[in-house]
Image: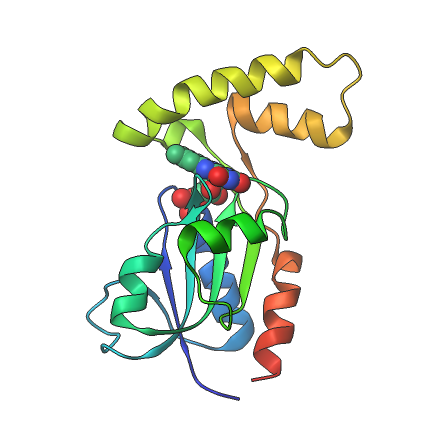
Amino acid sequence: MTIYTIVYTSNTGFTKKYAELLGERTGLTVRPSGSRDVPKGSEVIYLGWVAASVVKGFDVASKSYTVKAVCGVCMGPTGSQLEEVRKKTKIPADVPLFTLQGGFDPNKLHGFYKFVMRPVLKKMKAKLESIENRTPEEELALEMVVSGKDLVDERNLSEVLDWYSGQ
Ligand SMILES: Cc1cc2nc3c(=O)[nH]c(=O)nc-3n(C[C@H](O)[C@H](O)[C@H](O)COP(=O)(O)O)c2cc1C
């Protein structure tokens, strides 16, 4: 199996959690993107949080490292938004992309991100509250928007681990 480094960018901690879980499962070293310990040009698995369908930090990471696979950590379900995220982040077609459901924590957002999310969350909350018989997924989404929720789950890494074991 090829030795890669796991490199991540996290804003509120969910991506860091996945990076560490992936590190535990693969035995690979885990470092924040830009760490001095990761030499330029290193082969990496890159994990970044998703903002408006863009994997944050991928552009910078792809200039510093040889990115072998990308995981976008988002509030949507694992495996969702793949086409949109690949297109908006400009991830080359030959680089595998996975999306992983992380969570959402409005209390950990600060500054710009808090500011931009305020109207989005208000809209999402109103829309979800207007649904009379909410499905369990809609109920969860409402809870996430209102008070935050950690949905990091090791099982969501199964596709990434399958890909890695084939390397
Ligand atoms: C400004 C902003 C934009 C976001 N855009 C998306 C999005 O397009 N799709 C999605 O599923 N989640 C989106 N999210 C949710 C984050 O991707 C999610 O909370 C993620 O788990 C954060 O990871 P982190 O804790 O490592 O920062 C957005 C969050 C913020 C603050």
